Image (cartoon, rainbow, N blue to C red; front, top):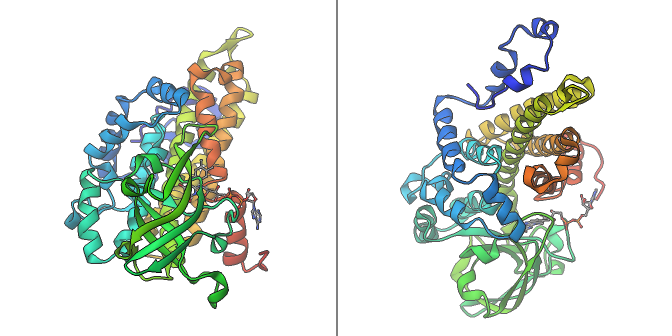
Length: 417
Ligand SMILES: Cc1cc2nc3c(=O)[nH]c(=O)nc-3n(C[C@H](O)[C@H](O)[C@H](O)COP(=O)(O)OP(=O)(O)OC[C@H]3O[C@@H](n4cnc5c(N)ncnc54)[C@H](O)[C@@H]3O)c2cc1C
């Protein structure tokens, strides 16, 4: 059975509604969409680990904008960061479905996997397109935690979502790439050993298609920082360890090129479906966290001599968000299933991200409304989660861009850009 204790929610529902729905088992039976027994074990194990890192842990880090080092180390020690790394390279050899279960459970527990989730999908580029030598060199160390690949350098201040226009150049000079340019919003750069960088190796005016001439290069941040790379932290509305990067003749060995020169954009696209699904799982976890907190509070908070949850003005937004959560959860499970069976899943992965980000944000608002003034008090954690889950309307891909993908690439409507 699922982990959510819905007994609090059930008290909202009248006997009449229950009869229509088929009895008291209705809500919990329908929560079991993507779970089988092995996942149940996995969920229990992740939940137990997360119990060591309660609300207070995240709240204090949030206040200081500090990196959750102890949590990331515990996740790594437990092997969760190596979920998608094949067994031959020291990982667990599991799929995106299992990785989703882990990330969902971290967020469902009140934690935030943004501190480390990127390693799961960045590593995919190395796995699919890196040479055998690269895989042997890096993957076992990433799996055992002695090396972190948590930074992904794509976004630039002057290009935004129009990635093919990015300006950072990597010019081959002998056995080195010399890199100049600027990146922004590069998360975890201060806490990662390696970064996968997307840079232009051929100027845009010298390629037939603007998607050509981009390359993926591994940058060893330990060597680069202070020697051609400057990292400037950006303080954001939530605790996210994001940074701005300045490259000034940074030299990187040519053997750090991942895959073929000029094909980086294709490699980027390859990793996006996994990224969408994994982020969607985090949104589902956030929504489930809000659901439980909100139901509990609505049952306990007494105003006008009765629990506020007795009022349909409080009940209905929670019930609607719950229905949307269930629908989004099904789409995430479907996208993950398709991905793991090697089938095309672009529309599903994008819809999963869209629906899940929408429902976590919907729930964030429902939670604040239900908590009233206490929704704004730091010690209740609602406002922290509210700030954290807001990000997913914008990053790693904004809602508008998903809608435009669906409109143009799935529905065949005319291109807008
Ligand atoms: C906390 C945080 C962490 C991040 N971490 C990373 C990271 O680790 N690595 C990395 O490379 N990037 C990272 N990003 C960057 C993130 O991926 C981008 O912010 C995101 O893709 C949006 O790009 P932008 O900010 O440049 O917005 P812009 O492209 O400038 O767009 C601004 C707004 O206009 C809308 N818009 C733009 N064009 C269109 C259009 N044609 N039609 C309709 N609407 C449009 C967008 O949807 C958006 O709402 C992070 C961002 C944040 C805030």
